[in-house]
Structure formats: structure tokens, C-alpha cells
Image 1 (cartoon, rainbow, N blue to C red):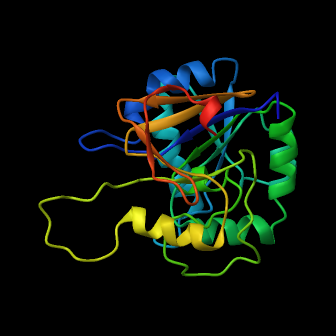
Image 2: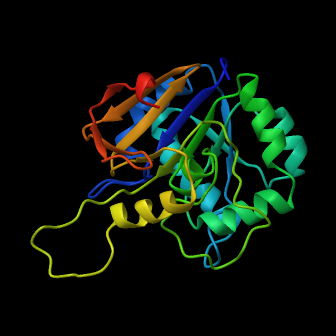
Length: 235
């Protein structure tokens, strides 16, 4: 994985800003040698077409000077084979994972990324970069053949991680409770990414960026707050 280039973001939008607006500087740097990014729009389950979702991504990336092409515009496998970079958008992680398995796209993307093609994920697309998609917040409105993901990193991510509200009277489960339940049956580390945070991974270097700490969960251990910066030694 020494050639990997990954940009894994918790969300495509933060409050009060448009699609990818808070990331324009990071996008310019990450895709600095790229003319066109191939967009995977498969996570949106109805109500919006692949073309419409691709247009949203295109409009969001345009201020950063980046062109977007939908992977569905032609043959999927040929478009991945010829892609300069891949961006997998957010939506429902189960819909995305089911489509990626059924279309046979996981291995081709994994191999391209191993050989240096930049990969960006947002929300569901970030879930897809982990070992499995078992720590998504989404409802399983469809069921994929497997929960195995791209395995571009050696841990799982929980995007949109929320802390308990001490003033709330809600008595339901917290994200921390759900992740602890996951660890009852699974061993891999889980990194909770708060809104407006992201990982920039270059080879073996993993950097947490943004204004928030992340929360790291290890089976049988108390969670740890992780400050922005290099976090290689923790994962």
C-alpha cells in the first residue's frame, strides 16, 4: 500500500456551506496533477439519477478547478481502467456496496489504488475504503452479497460521528454504544470522524485534518480522543 493516495472525508457538506465548499483547498492539493476525476454515483437510492448526482459533484468540484466524469457514462470497467482518479460519493452505504459487488468493481478499483491512483471517498464512499462497511450509520435497505469493502486501510471508519448531547433527554443508544456492539463480534479498530474532519493518506502516512479531534475505538479499551496531525502510530 506504499503508493496509496487517499482522501477520506466524513461529509460532503457542513452547515451553512455548499457541496464540498469547505474542502476546496484540500481538493486542489490532493488532485493537483489530475485533469478529470471519475465519480461513482451509486450510493443514492432513488429520487435522483446518476446523471443528476454527477452534476452535483461536478458543480461542487468546479470552484477547485477539477472536472468530474460519471463512471456510469459508458462501460464501468473501462472507465475505471482509464481513470486518473476516483471519487465515491455519499448516500446509503448498503446500496453502494451491493452495486459495487454486483458490478465487480471492488477489485479493479483496489488494484488501481494500490498502484497509485488517487481515491477520494465521502461518507458512504469513506465507509467503502475500510475493511468492511459494518460501522456505517445507514439502514440496510438492501443487502449486499458481502460486507467486505475495498480494504484500502486496515481499520473501519464511522463517518458523521456524533458525541452524546449532555442536555438531551433522549435515552436511546449513542454512536459509542453501537461501535462497542460492533466490537462484541469484530476486532478491527474503528475511527469516528466528526463532521468537517478528514484523513489524507499518502503511502503509510496517515494525517487527520480539519478542526476536530477524532475518536478511536479499540476492542476492550476505552475510546481515545485523537488530535489532528499524523496518526500513523495509532492505527
